[in-house]
Length: 268
Image 1 (cartoon, one colour):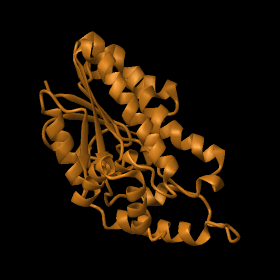
Image 2 (tube, rainbow, N blue to C red; image 1 turned 90 degrees about the vertical axis):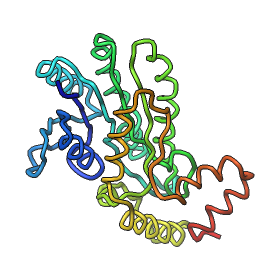
Image 3 (cartoon, helix red, strand yellow; image 1 turned 90 degrees about the horizontal axis):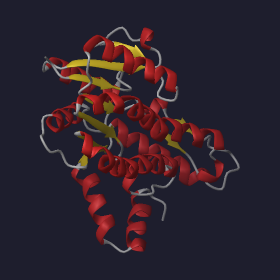
């Protein structure tokens, strides 16, 4: 019997690439989308789900279990981007980012754990971000929401290990997806003291996404992790420079690392 895989945010970008790659290799994949009726080119079923709506989360989990009697793998991929000076970012948008990037995956995990505990096995993979390892200027809320998920999964992994459940964090760098188009951008206010720096940083961030790696790279890593008997807690997927930046943060004095980031974003 094939492994049953649930991917949140499976209609585009990284989620779609993972779903297609796994489907081609014999996995039975279910993706989710808030508006699956708008997607006409998916090679695997898309179920209607909003990770912020616990009723819809529980409904989808139950639907899959009723059809297949198990769930082997859950990939928490659904997420949103957010940029802007923290001072000028509306509180409502900060809450929305944390709802989707942090509370959403936790909602999914809570809904699927009883089934995985009953099975005595399961693997939950959480797509975080290399940005979770550092506070990035004008992307601080995004970094914080993903960092919160990274740390929480470290704890949850230890709590659920006794039930035969595996948990893994996968932190991607910049990939060529449509995340920039769907990201919340705090408006570039005409009289803002951050106007120049924020505008330049926003342009640079969008260029990084446009020139990012192929999402297929993430799909291949996810497949390898799923097939690994004892996966690591953390994986990083991205350019050598992006992964090396995490190492530098560990070894460099804080102010030296801060100056490096300031120079990278042209803020010095």
